[in-house]
Length: 418
Image (cartoon, rainbow, N blue to C red; front, side, top):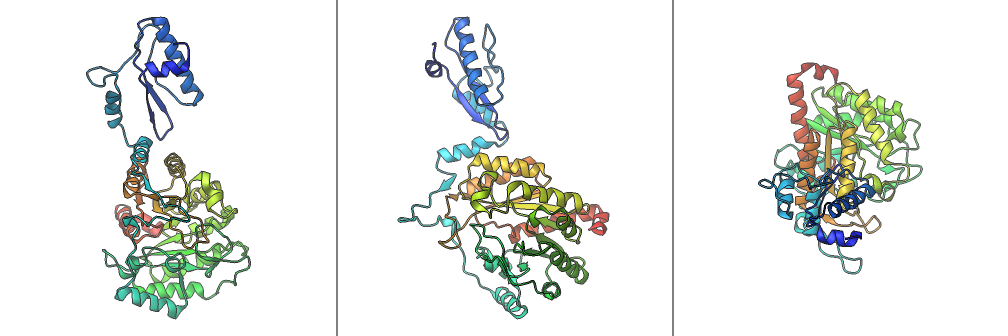
């Protein structure tokens, strides 16, 4: 009874991790001696203090404080019953881990395992798919769908369940100045200069398709004085001039954190300002180019919220399966939500080629569903989470479109403001 080891053996202890990283220790002492009981309480409090966690008092100097025995008895089963009544927390992901239901292994380099069934991709096809591909070739436009080898290309271009074909247009050329380890877009320190006619061509091409919602993104252009923000702004403004009622999502780079660049794009007339943090804070240097970082991306999203007209949504996305832990994902979600971001998406990282970063694990659909539930509980207006979900996934666009239209129906002034 005078060492920590024996105390853990004679006291029933249940440890429960919460997204706020709190620790609950519940003990039932088998000692009748008040001095021994106080010693155990003191040592358990010391353990909690070393872990820098908050604990609820569970003992006094003379007796043990307990929940009502009739409702939650001091047993492991009783404690689990109490936890079951709480909101979704990190323990849900920990239990998935212990049941091998959180993810599926990828195997080794010499003995790779096949992809799980939920990661099987469909072959692109359909009349709308052919039409969009032909139109893009005629106008010499680039899509991130093709450049990044998106697994949803067939569904988005053919119309999917909604019957509305969508494509994510990539402007500022097809060559990026950065080299993130997950991305399949080609890179160069000195890419060709932007096409001055591109904003006009892109606006006319998109307008001719009759789309209701479009995503415009770009490569990073660190070689340009304004990081490409002027080109972005011009494209959005010209498209809005041709199609005032079209909803435009701009998925932008970080502009190296330049507030003037962010302000210019945020006030261009777009409806959704999107910028992806890509991964959890702890893996930024592993996954992204060294010129990108978590704080800079979070600052961009916060600045966009401040500069954009009322009613403009902010959005970000992260990939899972890069080596992150559930705890890191939850902490990242909390920081993103604290930055005022409205929409967040989660998808499985897929390795484009053997030259790119390897997949760490395949996260299960059940785990993705839990992140979606937790995100909505945190206060995000919308969360799209699934193995095949990408930042510009059409199902998310369809929902966001409905959400924006609903907001504007309730407050017509938002339509004028944006």
